[in-house]
Length: 287
Ligand SMILES: [Zn+2]
Image 1 (spheres, rainbow, N blue to C red):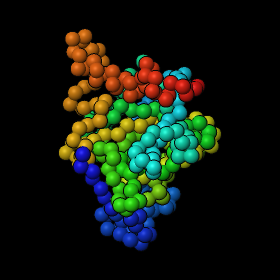
Image 2 (cartoon, rainbow, N blue to C red):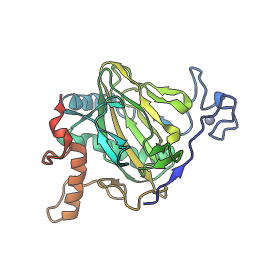
Image 3 (cartoon, protein in one colour):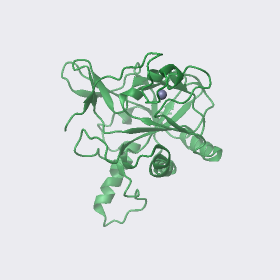
């Protein structure tokens, strides 16, 4: 492992040149606060990527699926180790266990990563992580965080702890209030709309939060990808990632043992492994 680090991104002052290279002042460019502002450089919103029919079908499946409380990864200051904890002051979000219905959603991510991202962002994806489906009920939120990097206060540097270059969010409903996706470095907040796809770089310039849901239930589906030729902190891809050169396997021949175990790992990642007594989700399922 070669940990890649970077100094903190300095949010430009209002009259500074914009970070995006436009030659405009930040306040007239990516930091514009007016109502009809542009979407900050690097953030792409594909409106109506999913049709209304697709959204309502997916919401129906999600509503009927079991939910479980999600962990956050924290540094244990006594041992220096990373630990997975449930901490509702940081993240008050449930995951959705989709079971056999996951396939319905997987195809949309495949299309988005392999077609939409090359077409609109101009990047080719090497591999991406199986999506997670999140459910924020009233009061649900996730504090500001980066998807790929973690800030080290001792080193005063951001450390790339996941080889993720791009983050992707799908929204399948908008019948809730609150729950904006907020990017503090650009004072930019996006109010989710059903069918929209949001893509942005995973690095710390694009730290973001899910603001508290006030009423209703907010679904979001999330996945992260590594682009071809991108930097790597780790010599090996994480277990379970989906390589885009290799269409995900739907039906598996029994003789193909390697693919079977790959498929099981993906399944376990999506579903949780019900046979594993160490899986904390086993005791915390709730509807
Ligand atoms: Zn700009």
